[in-house]
Structures are given as structure tokens and as C-alpha cells.
Length: 400
Image 1 (tube, rainbow, N blue to C red):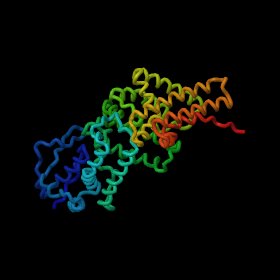
Image 2 (image 1 turned 90 degrees about the vertical axis):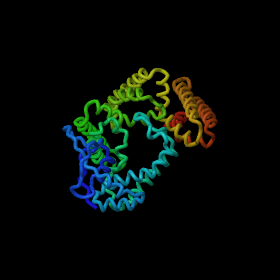
Image 3 (image 1 turned 180 degrees about the vertical axis):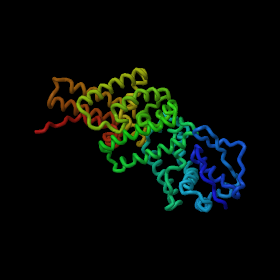
Image 4 (image 1 turned 30 degrees about the vertical axis):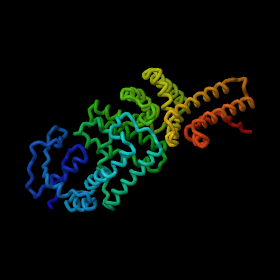
């Protein structure tokens, strides 16, 4: 069998590159003929077109449903390790796709501005499936695992939906390079202030490099899909179910705030009292802008859906197999009890044991109302997942 020719430069999608790589090997050296029309032709940055040379007889001779045999044939043909891994990863992905689709049937059609509603059981099952799939690839390849750079799933990431096909290879390589640079900061599991500063600097450097590849419009579309603000916003809005327009409007409001006050969501670090005051004022202004943008009804839904306790409670409700509206019932209890708690603390005539008694009465009422929705065991779980606000009902003891 003849050896395959060098990897065609500029082919956009990774798997297409893999397919062209082995289809272009030919039945004998020097016998290849150019195709007259090929939609997968590579385009260089200066606009020149490179037509790949394809021999349609190669893949049928290599293809087999026996994956160990496929690997052996690819190695015999001279394919490099990372290309074999890309091809094998796609073949294994096909084997697992039905199971993944059963767990998340809407994944293929989910728009970029939405995340899957959190369900702990599904989350765990998907993680286990991913580990099993990765183990299958590693077991098949043994020590010749290659790199993760050409794993076929990379090009499926929706963050590249707004990137023109002819620029995706260059963008993907840029992302791989900077992800490697970031890996050191995350290796310990604890992000120090120095790590945080490094990550922020790398983000800025990557963005500047990206601006040299993408046009301003293309870069803006990439950012609204892949920036830290976009990723965090998708997570926050899981229970809000935004439209694309709402997502884009909220993103436009939150991006400047994150850049100035949240270090692009790497954490705020140590702030002075003046900086805390400025950030608090800016957060209030942002909240008012969000309310004005969404309107009263949707703003109320936004406030509820983005509350940390609400999201925690929604996951607990899903884990207990209760109707989704149960989360709203818990939210109404939370808001009612919290308001009445504020009233007690604001009433200067209620102090000492009197205040403690009133708070204890509220705590008992909250337990009764929540247990009616979740049951006794569910209430105990709720105190940890969504019910942290109930700690306000237990006054802190002053040190002696």
C-alpha cells in the first residue's frame, strides 16, 4: 500500500482533513488526478485555492467496523498518531452517539445561547459516558494516544459556529496554543492572585491575536458564543430560557461589567473598600439596566431564575423527580419568609429573646411549607441545596 501524501494545508473541518488525508493517498505514487470540482478544497489566506487530489478507492480499502483492524491499517498506511486518533475518535463517537442522544435528545438542535437545564442524574450519566468513551479510545490506541488537538469533537463546538470555514483551522490552533498556556494556572486546582492576573492577561493576548484572524463582525460573533461572559451567562440563564435577542442584550450589558469588575469571571480578588463600593454601585446600575431591557414581567422571571438558591433548588427538584413547578413554590416561600425576616430585623422594637422567638416561629413555618412540597427527607436535602437562605432565621450568638 502506498504511503499517504502530506496533510493538506488549510482544510477547515478536522474530520474532513482526516478524510482527505487518506483519500488522497492514491493507488500508486504519481497516479493521482485532480478533481474538477471539490467543495472541500482548501483556501489559503491570500485567497488562492488548493484542490486536493483524491483517490476514492483508498477509504473502502481501509474502512472496517473492526476498530483494532482499522487502526492497524491506518498505521500500516503511514498515518501519523494524531490523525489516527481523530479518525478513531469519530468512529467511537458514532458508537456512543445513540446513548448520548437518549440522555440529551435536544443537544444537536440547541442554540448557542442556551444550556441544557441542569439535572444531576443526567449530568452524572453524561460524565460517565464521556469517561467510558475516552477510555475506549485510549484502550484501542494504547500508548500511541497522540494529542487531543485533532479530536473530531473539537470542530463540533458551537463556539466556532460564527467562524468562517476557511479560518477555523487557524482559530482552533490559536485556541489550542492558549489553552496549553492556561493549563498551568489550573493544574493545582487553586487559583492564586498571580494565576488570576496571568489568566486575564492571556485572555487579552488571545483576543488580540484572534482580532488579527477574524474581522470585527466575526470576532464579535465568536465572543458572544465563547467568551467567559457568554459561558457564565448561559449557565446563569439555564432556568430563564432566554430568546436569542434577550441573550444578546444581556450579554451586551454584562460584558463591560465583567471586564471591569470581575476580571472576566476569574474572580474579583482582593478589593479595597472604595473598589467594593464602586462595584456595588455598578452592579445596582447593571440590575436596573437589565430590568429596563427585559421589562417588568421578564425581569421578575430573570431575578428568580438567576438566584443561586433557585438554581440549586431546581436541581434538587429534578433529582427528587418532582414537577418543575415545585421550584417556583419553593421560591415563593423563600421570598415571603425573607421579606418577613427583613421586617423583623428592621423593627427596632423587636430585640433580644423576642426577636429570636419570632425568627424561630418563621423558621418553623418555612419548614412546614417546604416539607409540604418536598417531604421530610426532601426538606433536609433542601437545607443544603437551595435552602441556605434559611440560615438567616438563626441569629448568630454574640461572642462572650
